[in-house]
Image 1 (cartoon, helix red, strand yellow):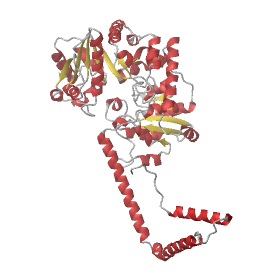
Image 2 (spheres, rainbow, N blue to C red; image 1 turned 90 degrees about the vertical axis):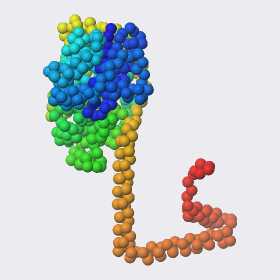
Image 3 (tube, rainbow, N blue to C red; image 1 turned 60 degrees about the vertical axis):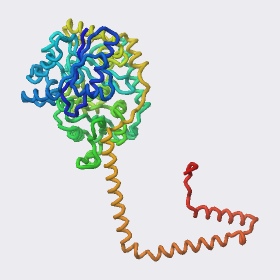
Length: 534
């Protein structure tokens, strides 16, 4: 079997190494195949990814590589009147497979790959239907991290032969998947998977958000996970330009009795800001008292997933948190343009809040069972090259013979093996703190210093104003007299309780000596208990 793995070579609009993790994942897949089988692999990516791998000591030994010159490609694609950094978004839109810019890229790949003709092409995070023109007999598999890929879930991905986002099986057949009946064994596994992760998330939830108090304040709670602006996973699935527009639109439509719990995608910068020209949190809290945002959520990786079991519903554009809502039988709402629309219980904000009030019982066990049986693949399988080769062969055969696109998704493994991967061998639940990049930490420290300096100046001005006030100057003699009186009284008391005057026996003597000792101790400066040598 010949397998080509494709990482989009053009520099991403969010940074040149935005997709480097995709490069790592696909390189690992090829290593597994070549280590355990006689499969032949080809890794296709921009040259900057290969340079980055060398810098980080990443071994690519034994892999056939195709390093494309991203700068040269950029210039050629610009020549046909297309912004190259928008090519990944362009490829996601149905009907663009034969676009001139995409075909130019495909022809460059065909020319550079020479006589390598793959049976399977695996991409990560980009639609690659345009490669069908140069490899018409190859099975194209679109890969992304699964909704259950961060602790306490096992890391996992999916292989979708239809595409990503709106072109994926979720985007095209989500309603059918929710109605699809599951076998008794898979339904039981889905139930055990739900219970295991519900308990795991509760046991490590690090967020100090008082859900019980919020329940007494609001009749319903909705989770609003913010995403990443300027990325087609968000921009192409909603009419909003930024996360702030998205947030304020939902808040303006939310009833007062519904608490809106907002969380941020910490890896890509803050939306809710307390200072600077984009300061907005104080305004939002004043204008929308039902906004619930806790700064502690900024300290943790994936804060949203800890809150999904605690709320009544999730409204999302395209976040994986929406899929997690179905796992725990919570109400899911999204815009009608989202790839989640076929799965959602409501596709308008008004309809969503209406359904939230009805609080109807829900059961998504069939959909969860289908995901575990045929869609989501845990790390323990992916690291086994023999299993991976067999799985890809079965996918190729199913895709060739399937009349229904759903039949192209074959069973991943036996129920016992799936149970071991998803539940028995799941990682120990751990809440991981978010470690921002060094430049972000510098900016945070600088902002905090500016706030502290401003507060110090304010206190200095207030102190100076007090010292210059008329009342302070008028009462100066009284304060001086009080100080003198206090010193005189202390000397008189010490003299009256001296050992020569106070009797050494009797109740009166013990009482006065005790009183003197306490008086002396209180007037001495308190010492801090420090280790020896300090």
